[in-house]
Length: 311
Image 1 (cartoon, rainbow, N blue to C red):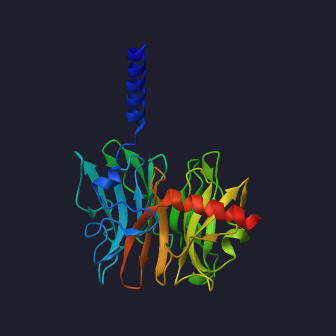
Image 2: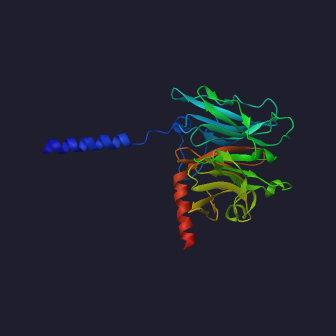
């Protein structure tokens, strides 16, 4: 009987050992893992004396892309890959524009599409250039040559920081003709029958609380939206907020609080594919880095605050 008990306990030990979460690929890049206080991400490697923002990952978190702007230079997308357990050094993406500039990459939740904003010339010379969204498709040997997104997106002279959900819906920043940049807000486009048929401004809960409303990150399951804007009730130039999708209705955005938001600009949020970490830019006009923080703690706290506020 004693032998049976020992065997049972040993099997339990093996079971829980197998379930133990393996170390994230991100810790191979930066072992200084944050808790509820943000830390600079990839200090000296990704976050440098240049201006870095907007990071995105493949679902396996073995490839990443981010934006870097060197002093007196244009925005440029850099990439890193995990090879044989080691991350490569950052280098310009293969699709880097030879004319114009690229920024704010986003990889779709299923990993098959890489979107980014670019001022590069359009293939159709009859169409006016602007800040358009381009995309590349995942192929066996890497990413395909990028193409511009067509209508209804081509009708806008500016579309930036596009992110996508699992069902293919797209969220981004744009404005109507004649709008000033500080009046641009969050729009979405729903994938219907394999097509994007319209661009629709999101409702007042999302878009009515500040200026410079931008950089929306949509959860893969569309359960929350994280974005940034400037408010007289905020902590600095621009703060990060979260809104939750409750039965198809978006809640009033909640400020992520003083540990996240400072007197500086916080913007361009994204969440790691495993849902564990929130990434964002913090900086001033000419300098800034990418930060990361434990997102599960923040999300739980925000949902609790939402419940408290309802009562």
